[in-house]
Length: 299
Ligand SMILES: O=C(O)CCC(=O)C(=O)O
Ligand SMILES: [Fe+2]
Image (cartoon, rainbow, N blue to C red; front, side):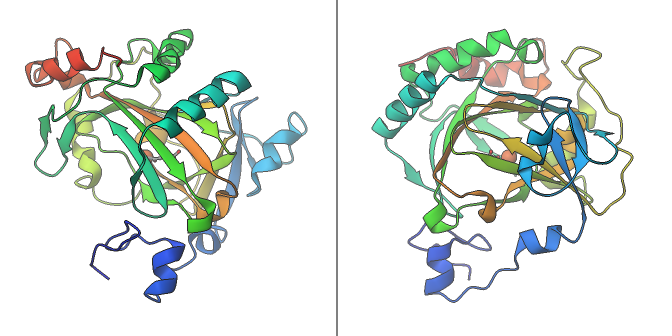
């Protein structure tokens, strides 16, 4: 099934609509992953406890079993208040949504990137919607986001009717920087983490060894997690929470959102910064200077 379909899916990506229409059968990732040793991340103690069901973290501090470290995740619950989340939803729904793959829709504000050719272009990028400016201002309250210069803001919508999901992946490492930020607005969900064992040529992971981290020592953490291969880690993404992936969780694990974890309409904002070579004092800064200037604008 290589054709682009009316629902927006192409290639191996599919949603409930094209799976029914074209009789595409897809292995159930949840069933496969549940065969592994599963852990749930608790945002109160920043540790893993055994389990699959995301409500496991709500037992805090009464977790069962041994707690395990899982470096590279930051979760701030109630990052947005209810009023802020409602206002944001209204503002985003006022803007046009574009159909995307796997039952998602998106609104993309950022430069054009060719990940294969490693080429960056300004394209039509002229900054971000003014109605979303307060979210970026609130990043200043988060020490881990010190120096974060947003260059891409992407609204993502997951529709339960379409069986929306995102397959396991690592965000590109040539252009997208060390911190991947998600602001969950509407709908509680889960980010499912699986260890990445593929080649370093994928996701441009080979670029990471070519630059020094801009994260402060102490925050930057390269500890290899001492858990075996068949492990799944489930990170809670409740409505109105902020999540940051960095270090090992950013580079050594793939992340995905399972269809079964979209039980109501989910909307989040994904934020990306540039890799150190494209930032000030980096060897490729000149190529990104116009983009960084546009990224300061709100319209
Ligand atoms: O929906 C999410 O929280 C994750 C989205 C994501 O991984 C991506 O856009 O790269
Ligand atoms: Fe991602």
